Image (cartoon, rainbow, N blue to C red; front, side):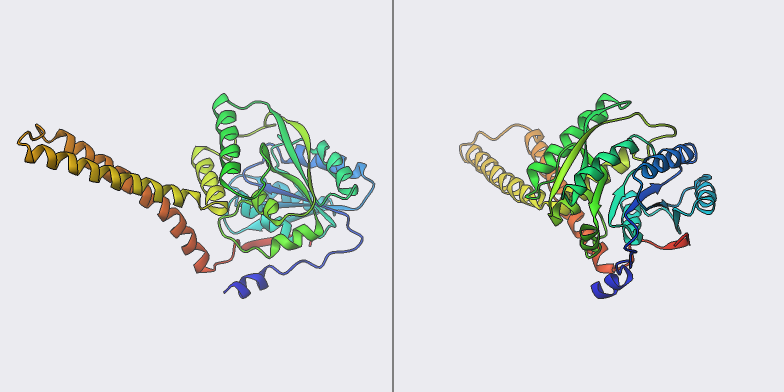
Amino acid sequence: MEKKLNQRRDPIVYSQELQYSVVVPLYNEELVIHETYKRLKSVMDSTGESYEIIFVNDGSRDKTLEIARSLCREDKSIKLLGFSRNFGHQVAITAGMDYAGGKAVIVIDADLQDPPEVILKMIEKWKEGYEVVYGRRIKRMGETFLKKATAAVFYRVLKSMTSVDIPVDTGDFRLIDRKVCDALKSIPERNRYVRGLISWLGFKQTGVEFVREERFAGETKYPLKKMVKFAADAITSFSYKPLKIATYAGTVLSLSSFAYLLFLLEKLFTRRPVAGWAPAVTLCLLCNGLLFILLGIIGEYVGRIYDEAKGRPLYIIDEKEGF
C-alpha cells in the first residue's frame, strides 16, 4: 500500500529555469485573494528571477475558485489546483509542494497575516546556504489574549514532549530547498503537521523574525475545534509521551485504589466501618473518569493507525490549470 501511495506522489520534473514556487492554500478567501496576488506578484517580480504562484483551492464554498481561475488565465505565472472537497490546510500545503517545480518552495497563507515582503529575507538566507528558512513571529497583531496565550503554551508543551527540535512561535510560512521538498514527498502520513515534518527531516535551518499582521479581510479558518485537532495531530505525530502519562496515571490510580481498599478493610475488622457510601462512590467516579481519559488518549493513537492502514490518497484533484 505504501508503494502505491508513493507512486501517486512522484516528484514533479521541474525546470532548471524555474527558481521559485510560491504555494498559497485557499479556503473561502474571496475578500483577500486579489490583494494577496497583487502583493505576492510585486514581491516576486522584484527578485528578477523566474517564479510560479500555485493557488490550492481547498474546497472553497464562496467565489475563491472563480477568482483564482480568472487570475490563472490572465497571468501565466499563476497555477491552480482545485480539490474535490475540503481536505484541510495541511493537506493543501502538501499538494502545493507536490506540484511545485521551483528550486526553492515558499509556503504562505492567503490572509496576509504573514507579510509577503518577508519572502525576500528568506531568499537571502537561502542563497547563503540554508535549506529551510522559517518565519518566527515576534509579535502577533489583531489576535485575542486567549489565542496568543494558548499558542505560546502549545508550542512550548510540544517542544518539551518531543525529541525533534521544532522551533517555537513559527507557522507554515517558510522557504524550503528543492531537496527538502523532495524528501517531504516521501512521507505519506495522513494526519499531517507539516512544520513538524520539515523539522524532523533536518537539513540546515534558520529563521527570520517578523511581526504577524492582523488578517486583511474575512474570518479565521482555524476556530477552536480545528485548533484542538491541529494540536492533537502535532502531539500524537511527534510524541508518545501521552501514552507514558496514561501508564503512570494508571499505576498511581491502581496503587491509590489498593491503599483505599486496605483502609476500608482495616475499618471493617476493627468494627469501625466508614459511614455512608459517599467516599466509595466518589472514588469509583474518579477512577472511571480517569480510565475514560486514558482510553481516549489510547484511542487517539489507534485512530491514527487506522487512518494510515486505510491507505487512501491524501487528496483528490478536481481540476488543474497552468501546469
